[in-house]
Amino acid sequence: MSYIQNFLGRISAVKWGELCLVALYCSVISGVVVALQYDFATPFFSTNAMDALVPFGEFWRSLHFYSSQLFFLLCLGHFMAIFIDKSYLKLSFAKWIPLVASLPVALLLLFGGYVLRGDATGENAGIIAENICLSVPLIGSALNTLLFSVLEDGLKRVYANHIVGLGVVWGILCWDHVRKYRAHLKDHALFISFTLLLSLVLQAPMEPESLGVFHRPGPWFFLGLQELLRYVQPFWAGIIFPLSLVISLTSLYFKDTLQKQALFYSCCWLLVYCSLTFVALGR
Image (cartoon, rainbow, N blue to C red; front, top):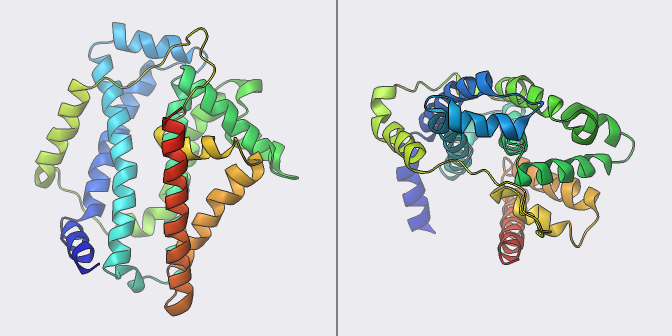
């Protein structure tokens, strides 16, 4: 345990927050370029046309894809680092709650990018997400109208939320925390070079429809939930199960028994989710 704490302590020394900001800058800049060429009315066609016809279109789309993935992963690393070194104790509980809430918002932003591709994976993920929203008692229809409404309105709402809505929400939740960090690009030249090289070498995925294929795996972070939906009703699998982790992460702020219980539950949750993900990968 001490080895893990020392290792994470060394990682936290390189300032996860600054790396998150650099990845966010790359994602936003490349996202603006991609958005100028994207048409939510014909998502699959416009995305393919971007790769084939727009100068460096494939690179910009890949840069947006990989920098967004890195941003979310770095956010998770940053969250773990501030918990391990106990710097979160410098925050009030009222400030801790928005930071925890920013994680699912960032995940929704990342998820929206998959849906907007308009390929087989994105279409399948959007329909599943819409059905999960509709399973919520009383407010399900309103929630779906706010976030997805894919079957009725196409990708219009997903696009608006990805470009503006969820980004604004994330910014409000994290502004008090983010403004403490200063990311100088020259200090992270190696990380930027790695991101650019990754985007040049690996094309962002696009999966066209294939006849005779009935099982469509969703995004990598969605596989566990997709597998759980095979055994549990959508409301419990898609709402209660993820919400329980958010509540558990919020409870990590407290000390003694409650923190230990929250940490134990969070570890068990991750173990179950990773197991479900591996089962889904084996299909």
